[in-house]
Length: 636
Image (cartoon, rainbow, N blue to C red; front, side, top):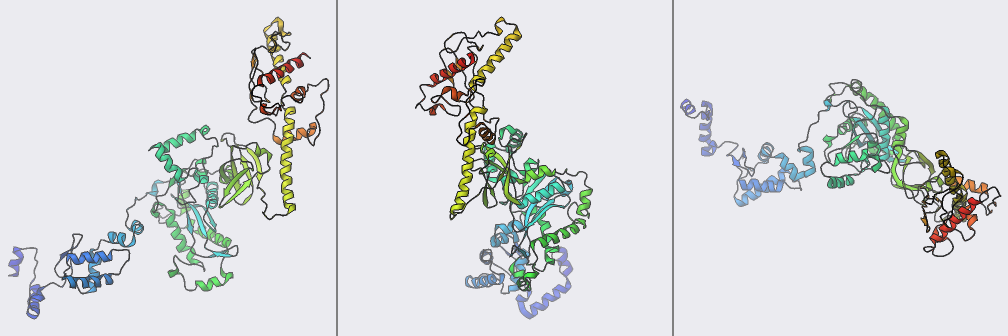
């Protein structure tokens, strides 16, 4: 009979022993003895068939409604609530908690349960798929990866007990930690120190993958913040990267010519994917640091208070047992040397040590020059020069530089490059903005700031410095007429140039002027043509007469003499300390200010300030007087 039943329906697979067991169960328990111990299958809310004791779809729905919540109820609590609800509504639900636990472990959709109970962040870390990266395709120096890591231990720093931070830069191809810095906190200066060690000791990479934190979102590093990048994407479209590269190649479009430390070295910046540690290879290295190095320290505190060692409070009470920050850095350097020589099982390493992988790489990056690197990592960006010099933000503090520096005052209103060494912020190096011919302007000292409760002596000393700067400016203003070309000298040089041209062409009137006087229409002895413009560089307006217009160009943006040079010259000529200028001798030409007299227009005075009131109506008369004086002086 058993063989005949199996031949008719091969899916039954009934054996004689099973048939005898069914007969015994029926003899003892009746029809209930024939029910399988796992019960009849039922369909859950998700549409899957579940084994075990019979569960109604309504009961399963109620169980998941109370289980998949952010309250994170236990399986036992949800089982008891579901059983009570099943009794009240006559649903089918097993009475055994073990049966519910086995059923949930076998058929539960764990990804959905994690999302509902633990949130999106936990689901990203545990179940979100990610792209795998093949590091075997990289060579040494193709890409560096940067990030911060907080040591899971305590150290002493300036009399306080803190948890230090490690700022690391790793080569993605060889796993060599090319640059690192151990400090009390993560900040931009720590990143710059790591970059300096990496670029000078190992080489400049092609690409640098950085974190999305605030420390890396800095113009000092990248030249463009994330908010500015989002704005550029909206304005420039999908080709915004190519447009930025082309614009940066044209340095004349950027008057300051500073794009950040990494772009200045030609490094392409890659930002890591937010909330995905898998995208940064250095995250796995930090786990190795915690397991192999930090756990060996007496002040190791682990990842949470629940997992900290029991003897940690006793260790922290003994201040002598807590290492200093410098000692931790020394111990980490020794451990890192061992790590670089140890075999590595990472992707693309093939059991080689990091140093062996670096040496066997087909191409290695070129190292940066120490001088250029020292300038680049210290540049804080471009700043506009104000009345008190430049104000630079270093960390959380803003410091002013060049308060009394005369060479910096001539750049007022324009942008300059400011470099400040984080190890010594008492001074700053100020450079010209042009990339092609970048030069040092000055070494600006930090501005002096007095207390609101300063004494009279402190106020007197500060005011004395201001008075010295004012005297230098007055001397420079007084000496401007003596150091710049006078109108008579300009006219005589133009006449001499004209005579040389006539002599070169063989004209008979080379020695006698044939030009008509721009004042009265008569022949002028200066030899200057009526159409020849006379440039008077002391003033900034255009002079005109009835017969000819003389173009008067404004002063140059940068005079040949510096402000302090003019002050020195003024003292030598007797313009400082209330001394009157020396009267001209018979062989000297008098300055224009002396020729014009008290009512004339001085060389450092604008037409509106000539002492005759509003000068909008007498600009031509003043220019005519100037030209008359020039012609008369030349005749003499």
